[in-house]
Amino acid sequence: MTVKLRIAGLSKKYENGDGIQDINLTVNSGEILTLLGPSGCGKSTLLRSIGGFEQVTTGKILIAEKDVTRQPPEKRPTIMVFQGYNLWERMTVFENLEFGLKLRKISKTKRKQQIMEMLTMLGIEAMAAKYPQQLSGGQQQRVAIGRALVLRPEILLLDEPYSALDAKIRVQMREELKKIQRRLQITIIFVTHDQEEAMMLSTRIAVMKKGEIVQVGTPSEIYNNPKDIYVASFIGEMNFLTTDDGHEVQAFRPEDVRLVSEQAAGENTFHATVQQSTQMGHYSQLTVKLIEQTIILFAEKDAFESYPEGTEIFFEVRKMQNFTKG
Amino acid sequence: MKKSDDLQKKWTPYLYVLPAFFLILLLIVYPVVTSLSLSLKNKVTSHFTLDNYHYFFTDQVQLGNIGYTLFVAVMTVILALLLGFMLALYIRFNNNSLSKTVVALTVLPQFIPGLVAVYSIMLVVRNGGVLSRIAQSLGFTFNPNLMYSANGLIMVNLWFNIPFAALLLLASLANVRQASIESARDIGADKWTVLFKIILPATYKQFFIAGAFVFMTNVGSFTTPFLMGGNNPQMLGVVLYKEFNQYLDYNKAAALSVILFLLCSLSAIVYVIVNLRQEKWR
Image (cartoon, rainbow over all chains, first blue to last red; front, side, top):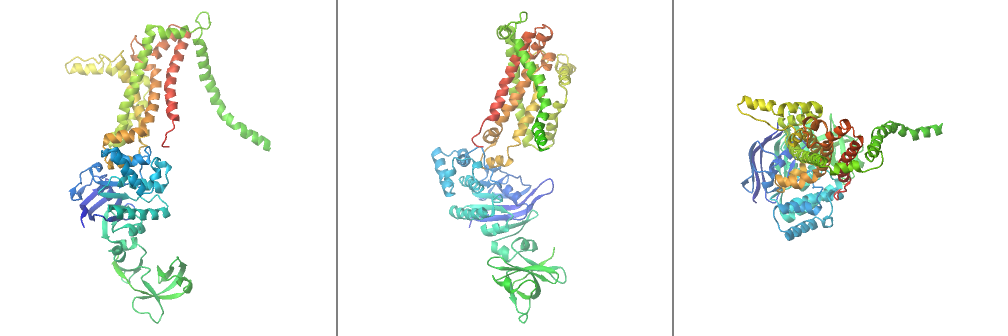
């Protein structure tokens, strides 16, 4: 596995104090790495720094082992797909894809061939002569991806590319992106605040908080072994129980529980009252009250019938993690 | 009851429009019509004639005046657009204390009465004025020679019109999304390519609109050429003033008014065409 991107000791400070600091990250060739975090955590700043749109304060960025830290965007082998597509509205779809190829002095016949190949791969070859405003959101998104990919970047940067699309198309676009990525074996860095999107797309996820990377790992590493409360609460559902001394919290996923009878109660078994009981599709969700805290449990599909509101239940937690508070 | 309500509804809009309508009728339509009819009459006999127009288009001095006026106005348009665009580009793409100061200065000329501004500039640039005195105190002789010349007129016109053109162009530059420019840079476009492929296609309309306004105000300008212009050639605004006030030839004055009106219409036509032009990409 070769390293495509290496970031060492990177920081970018804005005048108002916002920014990113102490960023160390390597991205392997052919990987989809997601920068995940809430808005304002610095994920877009990091992506823009990689693309050359931000002058970094300290640190180094190496792409394919070449130092690009001080290079402008047009000199870097990265192409960014911006939030909200950013197509040039005065150019047709074809011209949008052609602009970069022209600048690279590619012959007319070759340009046409490459553009039509790309549009066909994305399923929008019929839109070549249209203007961006005449396309649907999903089609515009495809054009934006095509415009970037036709230039064969070393790294494709995507800045919340699906935030403007509705939920159904978003899921479809994610699958398409994965397919394209597998086919072209391209390296992708993807910014999102949507943990589900990150879980679904990523080879690895870098979780960010207040300008720093908190944890980097595969989706299952992040989900199963979150490093701290922040990561645990950001990815998936997580219940937190404050312990008696108040310095630590016990955390467990709603699916890591088993409903047991009172007789079977042993270690890590809790007694609670059902407050709400809902069928969520292929599983049931029980909202239960445990002393003073409300937590969520997932149970099998029909459990909502067996444990209606007000039922006293016992449940055993099969996997629990302790975190220090704060 | 209902009927009177309906009636009121029907007539209210007319009531709002009426004062403005009568003002336009009284102050614009009536003078235009009388000017037109006056310009087509002989001074003495009041018979129909085209002589008044014939005079302006055959007399060597008057032809010189028309050419001079067009030269000053067109040069002002070209230079104001060019320099105004450079100014607007600077303001749009730099966000520092200098660019903020420049924005403030850009608005300033709109708040200074024209007469005051022209007199102030004359004090500075006339031979023997402030510039000459400074030069003299440094030990050499310098005369700008800007009074009574086209250069001087154009310079003062630019003083008024560069900020105006810059403000109009700045408005259209604000519509060029930063992200459009960034994505062009990203795929390898240098600054010039961004200017010609992204910025100019988005702003060219505003060039015509700003140009039309600058042309219209300068082709019929009076204050500056009256105070700073020479005796020959003269700008048409001054010629008109003299026909009216000194030669008391109202028929020729009327003909010249119509000629000026037609010149302004040229740029009005450009303005309308550009505004109505349908673009493929919309």
